[in-house]
Image 1 (tube, rainbow, N blue to C red):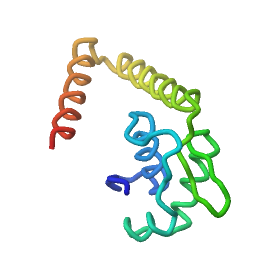
Image 2 (image 1 turned 60 degrees about the vertical axis):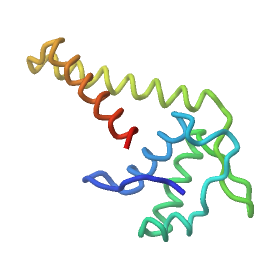
Image 3 (image 1 turned 90 degrees about the vertical axis):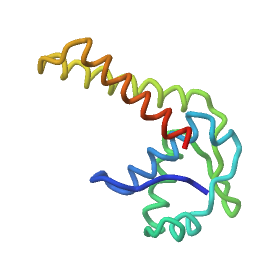
Image 4 (image 1 turned 135 degrees about the horizontal axis):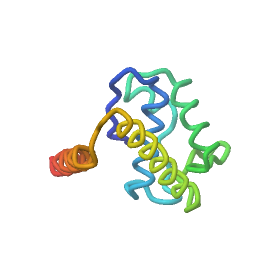
Length: 127
């Protein structure tokens, strides 16, 4: 099952989408691996099955998963979908960096913040 924490102000389906897409893009979920059933995820996470279904539909629309009727949903083997996630993340990063620069954030401060984030992520992975 997914080890995804739902927290923050973002809609639950977006948080779930982000968590699952991260598992796929980092290789923690492999191509053709079956995703848990919608009802199973909803029950485990204490959320509405329609929210999970909406997330799965969005993942499928973006090419990250595919569904087989009466069989379930599976991780797509399409490298273009994962590449698109990577490209989208870089585009968002560029926008944030540009906004930060126009607010007076220096390159050194931005690099320091990035290093902090990477260090924090490594600590979480070690736990």
